[in-house]
Structures are given as structure tokens and as C-alpha cells.
Amino acid sequence: MAEASAIEREALDAYSSIVTSVAERVLHSVASVRVHRGGGMRDGGAGSAVVITPDGYLVTSAHVVATARGASASFLDGNEYELDIVGADPLSDLAIIRARAATLQPIAVGDADRLRVGQLVVAVGNPMGFSGSVTSGVVSGLGRSLATADGNGHRRFVEDVIQTDAALNPGNSGGALADWQAQLVGVNTAVAGMGLGLAVPINSTTQAILAALMRNGRVRRAYLGIAGGTRSLAPALAQRIGRKAGVEVQEVVAGSPAASANLRIGDIIVEVDGAAVSKAGDLQRLMVEGRIGSKLPLLVVRSDRVVTLEVVPAELA
Image (cartoon, rainbow, N blue to C red):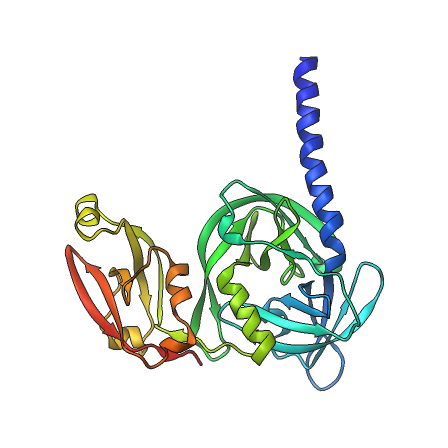
């Protein structure tokens, strides 16, 4: 019994050591953001942001700074800076802001594509106005979809979202989700329910989005108008077409390019212009600026048939 207790203590100490180490390395790179909306400088909400370059660029959630007239960021060391909103991308729920500061301490950036379900993650942010708060948990799921609204009555979907059980509360949005190496792997974006937190992954796709926001203040993106998720193919069909899975169409937006191309709910997209797709993130990565207005062949499984459709992606407004 004594030996078992010692093992438990050692395991707890190891876990605590990792979380403590991550917190020490990440806390100074996470800011509490105060947003001002309307004509004056009255309080318009709060959130978090993460420093990603030493010259003052921070990443946050697009919904944190939506319709903001001004914003400021305060850090754990007591320094506070006014912020300029560089650009926001509602589809990914990511935004870039810049602090009017000479130099800041950036976080190390990781790759969310290397995450595994069950892996330890640490969330750092400013929930409920409590700055520098740290929670920990595990990756509960990968490849989730998060429905959002663009303010004009249109539903959009943030794809490939990370699900975690690390406690998140209002004010955490825009904060850091870090792995055990204290690398940024996600930007906390929403609280979906008790014990359920979501974060936008930081990977090659979202890094390209952040680079476009830093460079141009906006992201030009092709748009199909579907929501979907991974669907495995029946073994015989998978063997016949050489694909194990595809993106099942779960919703088609009325009037969208997908609707014009006669994509239907239940269709499974397995190829886009010859490139295999097996999850929503694969499809999202292909919807780049160069696809706008160009004819795009889709290989689709419909019932037990394989059909080819042609879609012309529009620019996402």
C-alpha cells in the first residue's frame, strides 16, 4: 500500500511538473484584452491574446475583436499597451492584433496536426477577468466542426477544431492552448458545454491564414458552401476506388456553389481536382485564393455509385 501511494505521488508530481513548466514558459506571452465598442471608450468585452512575434503581433479570436473601435492588452508583468486591429477572419475565428510595444516575448509555435487524442494540453488565458489563469486537461477529440454566424444571418463552420476538457470560461477566448513542450497548438475559441472546450488548431493551414492577415489584413478564400465530416467507405468500394474515406456532405448552403453543382446531403467527396480528401481540413486546405472562379472537378460517392461533378468555387464574402 505504501509503495502504491509513493507511485501515485510520483505520477502526480510528474504531471504537476509538466503543467508548471508549461505555465512558466507561456504566461508571459498571453495578454488580457479589453475591447472598446461604440462611440466612446466604454467597456465592450474582454478576452485573451497570444504574442507570436517579438515586434508585437498577437493572435486572438475573431469574435473577441469583432466590431471593436479600440482595444488594449495587459500582461502579467503589469505592462499595458494600446492595440491596433490588423485583420480578422471569421471563418477560422482567428484575428491578428498588434501591440504598440517595442518588444514582447513570443510563444513557441507548434503543429496541431501532430496532436493525438488523450495528449496533455494546457490552456492559458484570462477567464472571468482573472488574468494569468492556467488549466490543464487532455485532447478529447480532433476534427470537430464549430458552427458560427457571420452577423448577416449566414451560418459558417470552423473546421478541424480541437476538443479538450481543459476548463474554459468566458474570457478564455483568444488564449493559448499549449502542448507539453509549451508550444502553441491552438487558440481557445469557445465553451461548448460543461467540461467541453474548443480551440482552433495552429497548423500549416492556420499559419497561412495568420500570415495573410499580417500581410494584407484579410484572407481571400474559395467557398463551396457545405458542412461535412469524415466518413469511412465500405471495404469493397474503398478497394475499388483506392480511397478509405471521404468528406460526407452533412449540409448544403442554399444558393452556394455546392448547391449549383448539385451536391447533395449524403454525398461523400473523395477527391478534389485529383487530390484525395478524407476530412474537412483536407477540403479547407484546398480552398485557396487561386481556386476562386475556376472549374473544379469533384469525385463523389453517391449511394453505391461514383460520380464526377464540377463546381466553381466563389470568393467567400
